[in-house]
Length: 140
Image 1: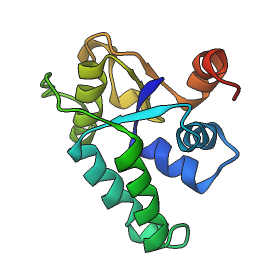
Image 2 (image 1 turned 30 degrees about the vertical axis):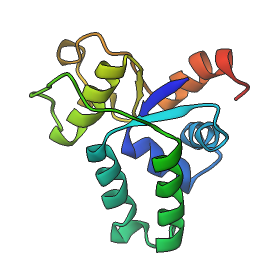
Image 3 (image 1 turned 90 degrees about the horizontal axis):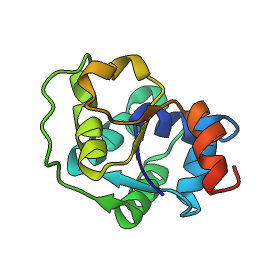
Image 4 (image 1 turned 45 degrees about the horizontal axis):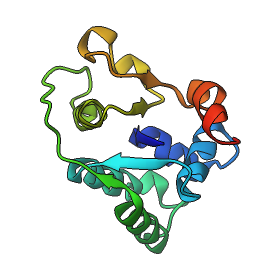
C-alpha cells in the first residue's frame, strides 16, 4: 500500500518506535507500506531531521542511511495538482502528491488539512490509520 507520510509522523516514528507513528515507520522499513514522495518532501525530511533539536536522536550517518532507504524504496512522483491555500504552506507538497497519486496522507496535524481545501483526499492520523487501515492490510 502506498501512502504519503507527513514529516511530523516520520520524525515521531523514528524517535519512538512504540507509538502509532513508530508502527507506521516500521511498516515502511519492512516494505509493507511504500512512501510516495517528491523532491520537495525529501528536502523537508532532510531539513527537519537535521534540526538541532533532533541531534540527540539522530546522527548524520543515521539520517543519511534512512533518507537513502527512502530514496531507493519510495514511489517518486511529480504533482499534477496545484494547491495554493493551506494553513501551513509547508504541507502543500504532501497534499499535492497524495491527490496526484490518490493515496492516503497520514499526519499528526489534521487541522492543517481542512476538509474544504483538501479536494476529497483521505487524511488520517497515525492512530486511525493503524487501527482501521493498516490492520486490514498488514498485521500492525
